[in-house]
Image: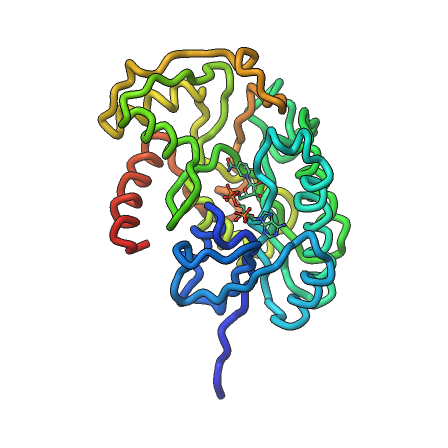
Length: 307
Ligand SMILES: NC(=O)c1ccc[n+]([C@@H]2O[C@H](COP(=O)([O-])OP(=O)(O)OC[C@H]3O[C@@H](n4cnc5c(N)ncnc54)[C@H](OP(=O)(O)O)[C@@H]3O)[C@@H](O)[C@H]2O)c1
């Protein structure tokens, strides 16, 4: 008798997290990556890709009925936090309603759905946060992600929600993230101003991907906080990046969030307590320096396309 591989649908499959998931799922699962617009330079061998808009209910439902995955990992989102303040309709469609379509489809075909949320569901007044703390999003992005959590929770599907924060990492043809942007600026000898009043746990995308796969395979339901294990200010993180990569930390100066005039308000004292995920899933998440050292190795492998 032929044993068929387990099927997984990954949305946002060419985003930072989605790519890191695909890199770890290929060869083990029959993985279909849903992308809005396929980029060959960001594709992994061993993954099938399909184009589609997760905000389109018909696309999502017919894809799920046709492919019939056992698991769905939703790593797609409208992630431009400031743009969400004025592109409200699109933000809500992608971040909230689309998750409802995926969860409804999951229920229909009896699949388990794991969706990714954010620390921006909190107001940042009393971090680090546990899963049992009450959300109070400040901006539209956070509101839309909290709505997405409610969509899956009320869908009747087998689900888990993973909240994460300050994601960085490497992926083929990836857009810049905080760490890659900072390295680039410092390598060019440019001065940067970094906020010293925003606290959070930097999270390496590859570690998050592994944790999500563990969550997917588990039978645990509900919300999980999954991030790097250490909380620090963005300024301190920037100085650590400079140190690990042998760059000039003297180019980094402090600034307050209020001076930036960003469209979306930020939760300042955020951060996660990740005890529940560590205990229930048996995962280990790096502290910030350890994460950066791992990231450095990943960048070298990425250059040779070995991850
Ligand atoms: N990055 C962070 O610091 C951070 C922090 C907390 C939580 N998160 C959450 O973590 C998850 C992954 O984030 P990430 O950093 O990997 O984001 P990312 O790199 O921006 O990837 C998101 C992906 O979603 C795709 N997408 C957007 N709209 C879509 C649509 N309508 N239909 C299909 N695909 C669509 C994007 O495609 P295009 O490239 O074509 O737009 C992109 O590939 C998200 O749920 C995010 O909210 C991220």
